[in-house]
Image (cartoon, rainbow, N blue to C red):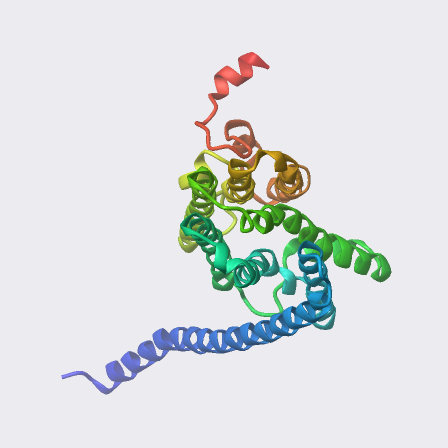
Length: 323
């Protein structure tokens, strides 16, 4: 039979053991509720933005210009909401979501002439869009959380200059680049698509799967409480930026699908090339500068691991002899 003292000690131990768990449970439930509310708020923002974009472009006869004006108008409304919340990450899902909505709009116009090759292409593009948007939603931590790149610029520049960077650099520039890369879709749906578009569709699918695998590898690594550690799991062992590689591959797939059907429109590859250049000269250098400061061993990782392409690890001894 347990003594009164042992029972008291047992109760105290149970209380001590249970209290942290209880606190974590309450915090998790609160965060989940807050996240759901913030996601709903973002949904409302985007519905308003896309409605305004539709109205802005409705009266324009030329289809491509109509899409572009609608895209710019919707972006400006999202910018206004980001200023209202003092959080430029309101724009984050716009990159992946807008091409899907533009594609649906094109389907509504061209559906009488669309065939199975069109739908294969559009399904691959939709898979990319939905997968990337879902990945954003999974990682979304509420309207108070903002991408470190935006906070960097916000702290570096005074208010008038920051808002110009916010509007044109963070919001308008990606919108314009993605729209330029999306132009092949507008002309592809107007063509009589054949099997020649299948390589482009396959490239889109490969790029999407690359991104998905890279995101899964990174999420699995983070789930193991590797805070501050350097991820070299899965694709990250062969490329320092496999997620960026996947994104670039997707947009070249969009271009190659059109090129397979109509080589005279070769110049529509400009958008994909500009996205490639954006990642190489802006996104990657900025990310690597941060990683060198915060990730131990990143300098060695740079020397042994390909920047973008999926390649075997470099032999340090050979590279040292070559240098």
